[in-house]
Image 1 (cartoon, rainbow, N blue to C red):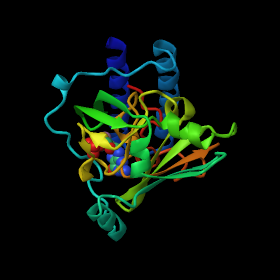
Image 2 (image 1 turned 90 degrees about the vertical axis):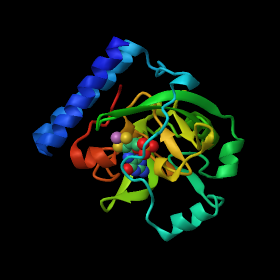
Image 3 (image 1 turned 60 degrees about the vertical axis):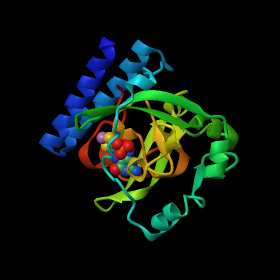
Image 4 (image 1 turned 120 degrees about the horizontal axis):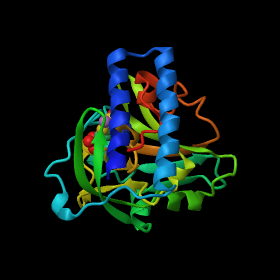
Length: 246
Ligand SMILES: Nc1nc2c(c(=O)[nH]1)N[C@H]1C(S)=C(S)[C@@H](COP(=O)(O)O)O[C@H]1N2
Ligand SMILES: [Mo]
């Protein structure tokens, strides 16, 4: 669809421009404004819960590269991975009625969604893959989201250049049908390079929103006190737009 390409182009342009120009306050403001504009335009044009395009098995890319962190350099992660991640726990916490801590088995036992989608990285590559896992909305319904919550923050096990990777979305994207917690890539357990054992799929947004090595989902009223307050690892460091709609 033409519109999607235009928005993707704009998002890529602004994020790429940002990397080149570097982080200045005025530029971060422009990027932030662009994010808001992008979010409003995206939703006005596409409908609030419009689906990202889905593809067929014939379209699946032969290899899905790893980008950013491709491993987690901690003893705990190595031990967990050696053990098939049998002890991995995903927490749902913050502004919820009933905090959760779920094992991989519990996550696999929930209703699952499988989708074949295209991942677009701002660095200029794309790949199509099949992802499987429960919808985030299922976990949110189990936990019971408080009325005061406005964002879901994704916590990750890895650090990149010494900083904790994290991301966040608003509750509309959190409840989007294609927002899933993936544990399978092309029918196989997630490889380590792609975020084993759990990673987010936020299909209407760019690659950096799709948090890998997922350990927790936190419901918050504001992003101000999370990281540097811009809603994500790259948003904090490089001024990447928080709403990265494609
Ligand atoms: N925890 C974590 N999640 C992450 C990253 C990362 O470095 N750490 N990189 C992001 C970026 S920029 C992209 S394009 C995708 C890459 O996913 P892949 O490694 O499966 O290709 O993961 C995103 N999620
Ligand atoms: Mo990316």
